[in-house]
Image (cartoon, rainbow, N blue to C red; front, side, top):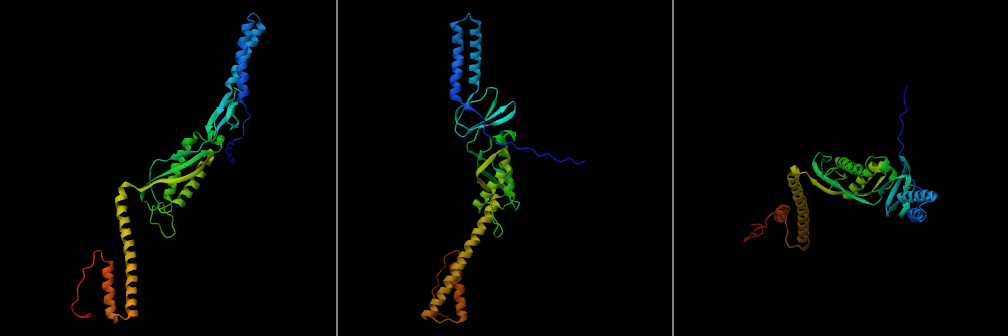
Length: 296
């Protein structure tokens, strides 16, 4: 017989029923002070003594039910382990003293992960770290659906960062391929989306996520630096050659239009070759003075 698997019901935050703490504070102090005063006025009367003791104990219990909340704080209220709601109203609040309470911060938090050594999409070892801005949205899920929501977020950030790095190359991607180094905004959006899905079970939302550190691992950093330098040199050479070709073309057109000199195809080829050598050379050209004719 096949059993149908049961689904785990997630907690959901709901407002708790609490009372203004100022009124209960005054009432508690009144009973706590009034009880002993009544006993002192008539210490021989058993009814007064019992009433004073009850009043004092009641006042003490009322004071035990007080708690204070600052802005962006919540208090989860429980009765013998049963969740009864979360109070988000600021100031002095009161609940029955036999209700247990768990305070939780709802403020925005900033997390900078440790530097992780992972392999990118091409298998190159890289170092990567992220800065994540997050906050608790559902206090019930944060407190009751995970064991430690802060540790849970830390672990999920590391896991999500490793997964992200394995799907992108550090740089030099194929055509239209996103890379970690060149497409920071797109990668940040993907990271935020990835983390939001991972921490949702803990009642946490991710407001922002960005890469805080990105570099090749030390063992290949030197080789990759040489590669980047070589590619930079090649790119510069391409730009120089492209500019030189344009300058030579312009020079030939100007000479032809102004009829300064007539050149046949062989002379044009020689002139083009000489100009390209001069314009593309690493060192400055050494002028040669021709004392003969142009074709001598």
